[in-house]
Amino acid sequence: TLTNLKKLTQYYAVTAFLALLIGVLLGPLQALNYGGVNVYEFPLLKVLIKSYYQGLTLHGVLNALVFTQFFISGWMLYLPARDLNVRPNMRFAWFTYLTMTAGLLTAAVPLLMNNATVLYTFYPPLEGSPVFYIGAAVMVAASLLVAGQVVGLWLSWKRANPGRVTPVVTYMSVATWLMWAVAALGLVVEVVGMLIPWSLGLTRGVDPLLARTLFWWTGHPIVYFWLLPAYISWYAFLPRQAGGRMASEGLTRLAFAMFLVFSVPVGLHHQYADPNVQNTWKVIHMFLTFLVAVPSLLTAFSAAASLEDAARARGGRGVVGWVRRLPWGNASVTAQVLAMVSFIFGGAGGIVNASMAFAPVVHNTAWIPGHFHITVGTATTLTFMGVMFWLVPHLTGKRLFAPRLALASAWWWFGGMMLFALGMHWQGLAGVPRRAQVSASAQQAAYDSMNMALPKLLTAISGGVLFVAAVLFYTVLIRTLLSPRLDDPESTPIPTSEAISPAGQNLREASLLVRRTEPLLALTFAALILVILVYGPVIAPMLANYQFIPGQRLW
Ligand code: HAS
Image 1 (cartoon, helix red, strand yellow):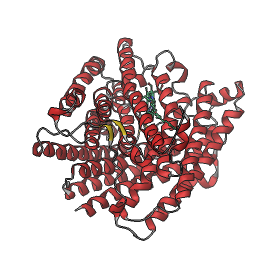
Image 2: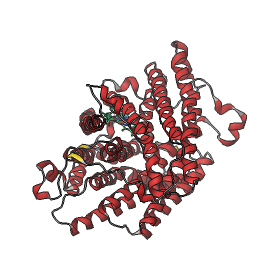
Image 3: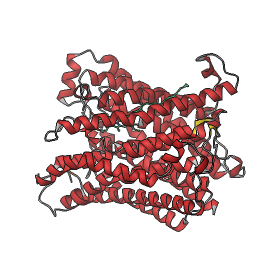
Image 4: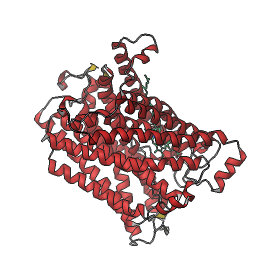
């Protein structure tokens, strides 16, 4: 029943936000570290967390991996099921949720015991407890089960509705799940084929270069697995919430089709500094990275157009003056628009990272965490926070607690992330390394050689600002969840937008763009071929020359 589906979605979302709560509370400790204060040496904290690296591992795993995966799994099962008006097999859906939670709890034990302090990239030869890798593998496997369920729902809908255009919310969700299925292959092979047997002592070593390459096969497209569910909201829901329409359905589909094909074959842009990978392939991955920025640029223009449509419908005037007429009093809209604004800078920084000429300046410096806090930390997280402001009332029939507090939390989060990003990008350009404890000599040397007082201060302050944002947001969320049910949940509808330029219902009458982007399975096949073409020649020599490097055991 619908009630059961809503309950499941609520479970996914609440588990996600609980993980984020713990992860976020660790954030200010990292920010203080980059502000020059090593709080990890405080005796009280030492009882709980053994080192800066354990804190950083927990922070990264909970926020970037656990929060995103749980929220997205619930969100992208619920939306297509409602969009197609079909009911998924709820036993299977609950089984998947429980499997994912079991994976999370399994991985949590060694993480909390400081037996898997390998950071969220778990690069070998750092060797964590096998329990951590097994838990992580179960979590990823569960997400693939959700992917399978959604693709299955879509295919049965297609069979029942021949010749119909897939509704756009379903289109975006299925494209994202299919992209994730191709993307996850690298990580699955790395963890199941290499890390688990190695950490169990079944192999005498592991090949770090191959492991890193398989990791980044998944590790770059995973950022689109985090981003696209936010894009779904920006395209399909935000325009209606702001009082306007989606710009063009065709363009929306084109953006998602491009993400499906081009998200994966780009991972070497994380490995420009790695030896034994031919430059030719690094350059090819670089150009493909520029290509995968194109659907985000399309999104920037479409999203801006739909916001302009909304603001003009509300009486907005002028070339930029219309911006003032957006509903800035609405917490859900404001959170998402602020997430978009910060992503302009996050995206621009990404293109800098991807450029081989700039990469050596920024790689492995504080610039990189600066970059990903205004991408996954805002475009994704702040959007999901904004979504929660309507989703919780929609799922539960409860009313949003203190909407003005909700609004304030969005501004504080945005402000905190922008400050953090400024401080960290600045420190990175000065040569301060990332993942460096404050007492580490390299960081000290960089600090001593330059006047870093201001960026250090900005970074430290941002931790406090984000802490306030978290207190405000979680007050709103928890008080909302604990309040009594007052309304029929459906009285807060899913804010599905109309399109200025819709796709129509029948494929035969649809535009060329809509028809060409409809066959998502064929596009997935094209994605796979492209991945094999650009990864085959990179991975084959690594396999032929497999190195058994002994591990650096951390448990
Ligand atoms: Fe990145 C490293 C390149 C996007 C996350 N990235 C990372 C890491 C993370 C991450 C977590 O090429 C660190 C990994 C690690 O630990 O080592 N990134 C890119 C590129 C893009 C990009 C080219 N990244 C993301 C997204 C992320 C994310 C999205 C998370 C969700 N990234 C890199 C590279 C590295 C990297 C290298 C490795 C660096 C190194 O050396 O180690 C692109 O996809 C970005 C395209 C985006 C745009 C912006 C479009 C703007 C939009 C907003 C419009 C706003 C409007 C508002 C309309 C072109 C859509 C209007 C407002 C009104 C008020 C009206």
